[in-house]
Length: 158
Image (cartoon, rainbow, N blue to C red; front, top):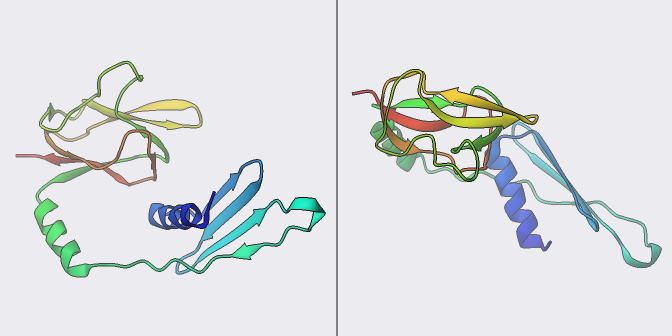
């Protein structure tokens, strides 16, 4: 794992909203902790020939925002209803790898239509739309970790 991979991991964790992530491999141990305004990273790497391990601190990750683009994006999507994750876990669009996805963009859903699954602690939870309308956009990639309240789909209620 090189420094670019570590920097990308730090950025991903900062965007995800997770408060702490630990990654241990055979020759490296990484802990990333995020707070309200700062990101702290500790990296311990196995040193050759019995040299003691030294923690290395990475610089805090600053979020770069584009307020004008964000406002336009919100106006475009304000007419849509979000289907959000009710739990923390891993998002899956299919019931199993060999099956087709629950819903596609353009599909019409009702309040009891199952739109995806979120796996948490080895339990697969079916997520219902809870709204009626047409799926406009899938916001999350299959197999991606999701947080509580994170938008998963956009639905046009018209």
